[in-house]
Amino acid sequence: MPENAKKLIVIKDFKPNSDRLKQLKQCPECKTYYLYETDYEFLAFGSEDEEFLTRLTENEALELLNFHTI
Image 1: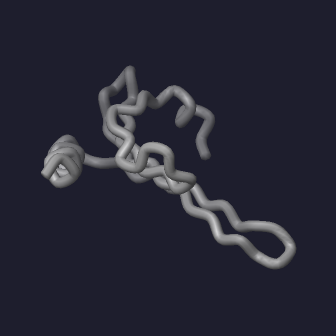
Image 2 (image 1 turned 180 degrees about the vertical axis):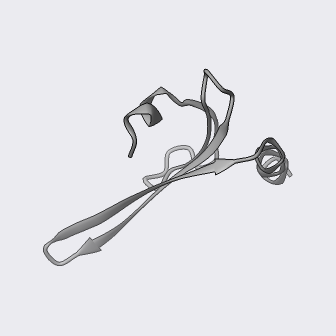
């Protein structure tokens, strides 16, 4: 994950109290929205962790917020 990803602010946590995160984040400087998601898979000799950070347009972020408030 890029170092600047640590500066992103959580706008909405779509899965509170879950081990698999799904959060709408925003850059405090440029106001760009991002969807942050994590996933993991338990394997016999450890686990495989994944992080995804997807840049969203403002319209995509608003659609995501509207979809999750229904």
